[in-house]
Image: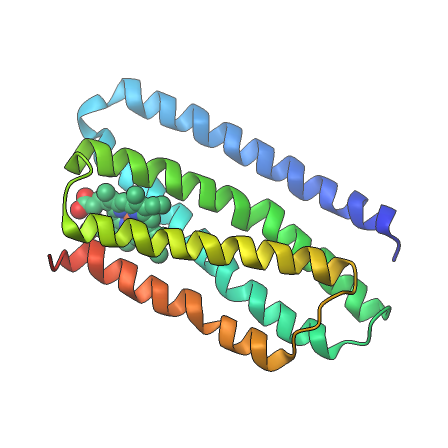
Length: 178
Ligand code: HEM
């Protein structure tokens, strides 16, 4: 599979993502004006939907790297992993992170005026998760150029980090322990 055909196969995924984001903007605007009093729970619902999508991708991507490391460089299997990784990053993980941040920050401002130890700790944990997101995006580029040097064991360990952060973040926002 050539680089050009990789680009072509990413095209429809990008188109779907653009349609999805446009639909979200329209839905949010309608909800905001039609039901301003119940907009907070709607925003929270959209936030949680985005969180689930982001986490699903963040857990799946390092798992793909584990399999990719085991595929021979230049093989058809390796090229297929490149397409899967780029699609997952561009069509799901990136937009889901943006929607999570936009609605999370709005909830933090509207509901809590950015006050609360749990909220500050949560934002710190989400910054760490976003840093890991950046690291994984860099790894997608390295894999695309056949320049990954890290062994499967490394990606297995990286796979545990989003799980741990997710547990901390969910306890902070639901239990609000401090
Ligand atoms: C991007 C930064 C984020 C900010 C500023 C943020 C902020 C908030 C705020 C203020 C709420 C409303 C809490 C309430 O009404 O009691 C909320 C809800 C929630 N957030 Fe986030 N959040 C962020 C990212 C995340 C992430 C990454 C996760 C999970 C991994 C997450 C999981 C949740 C869950 C499960 C709820 C619903 C909690 C409930 O209804 O009690 N958030 N978030």
